[in-house]
Length: 77
Image (cartoon, rainbow, N blue to C red; front, side, top):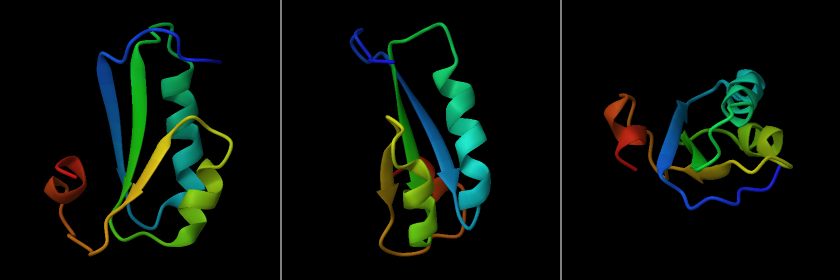
């Protein structure tokens, strides 16, 4: 599904050590009828397995270089 509308909403999904569980969350966002969004998955110095799970999705993977340990870190990346 191509994104044709300009981005108006950023959906931020923060994760740490939950690579096997992240795909259903991303798929849920992608199933929405509203299309003017981007999906940002922010890893809190997560392992490479999470990035591999996201391959083939339009989600943008950003992995923090240092573990923050609180929700504010990934939300403010």
